[in-house]
Length: 480
Image 1 (spheres, rainbow, N blue to C red):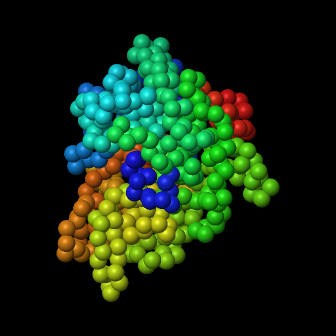
Image 2 (cartoon, rainbow, N blue to C red):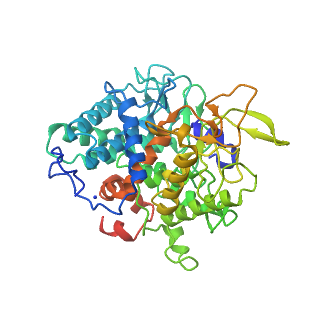
Image 3 (cartoon, rainbow, N blue to C red):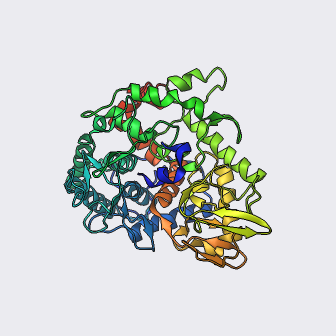
């Protein structure tokens, strides 16, 4: 099962931008506006985090590790994010177009040629989908990991974005476009619809389909829209109707302004990295206009970020460090799975887990939760970045940006820690960077800064097809 899903439990089962002197930007690349002036600390974070991908992604096959510096397997979603950050680096003057093109084509060729089949070993995927985790050298299934619909979706999202951005006449750019579409078209989305109008989260060769589906408001929007938009193996638009039919389970004002609630912030960020939801509405969103004029999925994420910040201000569980300027709960590493008495109160801590207001909140804050929310609340996120660096940066902010997470409440530990270490005067800090948490930082800062990814995806025919089939209208989509 997808790692995030598995750890969340039953509640969630379910800008010209060419830098002066950079001669690698051909006229074929779309020019985008520079957007809002970027704070120096935000720019530094984006560059450091981009450099992480450069450092860890293998040049031989394009695989990005799930985490680093701990030795690990590759996360296919992290590979999709790496494919997305290379053009960002070119636009910023941090990488030549030649290098970005080479890295991209190497990756896409590798995935195109990976063996597929129902066998439990020696394969990278099946039915066009890819396994969640792959061996860093062979690209074959790692361990008993699942064939993952959502991780495949984000891998392919990175490929489809690359196909839009690499729009030049160079033969390698043409091949990027051709192979990306071929990989997408061979995904048998209809095979994964094993229950009426619902797409399963995954499949194991040993035991078959995972019993959990994409049917609660979360990051799975990208899965459904790519599946509905497929030119070869589409699922019916009724899949989107079914998705919206359970919104009453999530529609709440418990943690802040009324919104579709999903506790960890990645659910409000991941699909938004590739889809510009501003001003476009499906049928359900159109029905909300009488009560909340101008409401859309982008505004829903704005409200979700507001709710998380309010939760940190209220701090109902009394965790150290939570404030108006230090906040952000999502799926991330934690110190370990144990209970410990702190100031006379028993506290429960978790290792890797999905965290959110009222859900597995153990005082562990993930910088990516706030940083990847910058399009939704730029001022608050910038303030958060500065506060985290000022208070915890000596241990938390390093060569490649923020380490994955930290916990100011856990200042001592007699027993073992599963991850990280405790720093005097700071508390527990993770010792790894995670690819799926690094990627959203670079991508969302760029969407806020120049909208490179969003604008490219405005013209991505498969995504546009999926949105329109699902009933979305309005805004930029009416001209797509």
